[in-house]
Length: 546
Ligand code: ADP
Ligand code: MG
Ligand code: MG
Image (tube, rainbow, N blue to C red; front, side, top):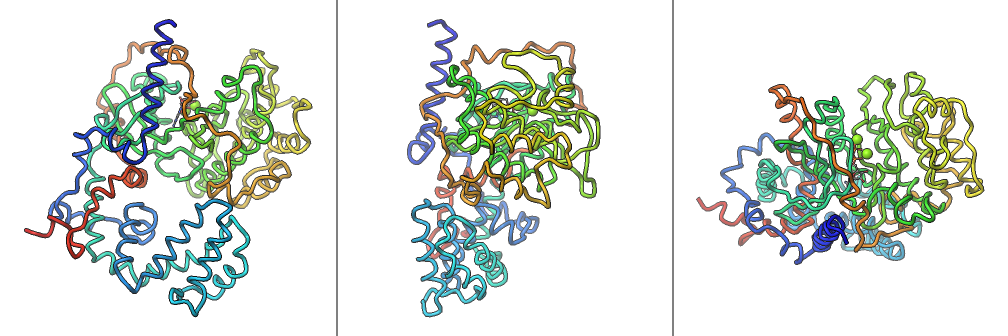
């Protein structure tokens, strides 16, 4: 083995062992004790002033923010009037993530416990309509059986419990966590492992939050390369969009900071690698996917696109290498650098952005366009998953960009016998040259697309709840990335000088942690539990004594 090969083996070992150790006691052992010790709650006197400035909307502090919600639920549990409500809430949450086979039984149990007026746990705030639906529909597994009930439950709690929560010890505890959350987090909190992939402005590394042990991906954008190649706009757009969208089908941003040389985005680590790697590098003798696998990935990508489009974001860079697999084999969209957000009141945009061979005709023709361009790229991506080549090139063919553009505008796509009728029809519906006739996002949803025969085996409710089993599960002992020496180095950038205006942009970019993912990290790694200790009679220990 040469030295380069050895470097990869050593780096892979360190990375595999770090990501293996991320739950329970093993994770605690992996933590950097000095950094962990810096995560501690302040004395209440130090942070009480923050209370007035906090956004105290019910949905934000009691539902969306994970630590806020935990503490709100603890408050409810401490109060007999809210006991039934909080138990129902937790049971509904458990139901939505439970195994398929347990579902009917769980639903039945919930219905008996909370929906029967004779039961001592009966929840009288539930409206008749929700009660009837649950009682009649509980056998209909995997769906939104308790959706209305949950809405009514939350409305009830907002009215009856929010004020009490805001004046409780539990809310003071939340303020303490918000103080901790607002502390600066930057490169010293992270340790890099091996490189996972290479982008246009820098490399993406596996990394670990030292204090908690949680693994992330660190996408580095080289400051000088960004400046030279006018990448500022893309960098800030990528950061803003990733921080804003919360979907299981899109990678999530947890931190943004700067180092001397780079801007760093710390995001969900996708240990399974990208779809391009799986199509061409895992089994070189039979590239591409069978239809079952292609169908599953396409369905998850559609959920990601639908979420982006509902938030007025056009992605523009869908392609296999930007779709990443996690440990379980689910996929998420990543790489929002070319995305664009349509301001309210503006329904189209212009501008050439994307990857040659994927861009939609209307975009190439410099017309105004909107979300339709993402469904063309979806068609190209699906086609490539089956054919193991793009629809507008022959396998191995090198083609000039102008020629690819010409073919996209003029040629009809041909299909090999590998394509089933349903798959071919879907590809044609997506790669339809006229955007008004193309399948896609209509009336705020992708229903028409989801109802295509190609997806007949997809249960969309389960897929969206994350309980639909993936057709392929990555091997936990494998590293789905190129060997380090094959990733390829960047050339050094010369002749770029960074000035004050650049510095201003960097500090704008370096906004630190993002609340929801940061709180999730604290909970998942057990740090929240370690810090959330109560004294006698639920007092904040060592806080109230002067
Ligand atoms: P660029 O915007 O320059 O194309 P990407 O965000 O696409 O950069 O990242 C480049 C490559 O790095 C991806 O194709 C993928 O292989 C890898 N990568 C990116 N993000 C992650 C992540 N969150 N987890 C694991 N690998 C990633
Ligand atoms: Mg990319
Ligand atoms: Mg990009």
